[in-house]
Image 1 (cartoon, rainbow, N blue to C red):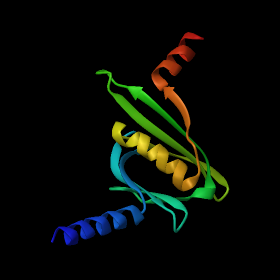
Image 2: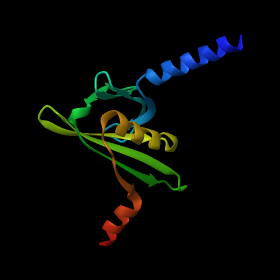
Image 3: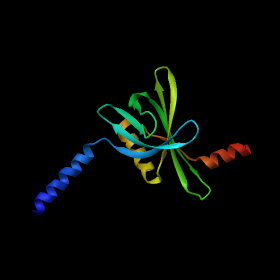
Image 4: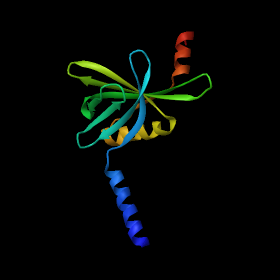
Length: 138
């Protein structure tokens, strides 16, 4: 009986690994309101897809991604808010998709971006400090 359960557990975990990676993120709209979404890496179609709850899905082929950058900001309570910007081309225009990631998923999403799409995100660090130095003229 233990062998059957162990075999089923191994089979189930193998199936889970075969599925494209997916992560819960948030996508801001033009006004800054954020919506829940799912970020998926699909290696069969060689594309990443973001499916917001209340907006149209965005599918970006890996080869159309020009660059990605990661940064975080801190809020009033010093909690980190993690951001990923995906710069890509669609037809003749350049576009940017901004994702808000949980702290737990941020590292995993950056790793998935590298392993699935072959893209290493530029790490910009703390946006608050970077903007502070710009405002002060440093």
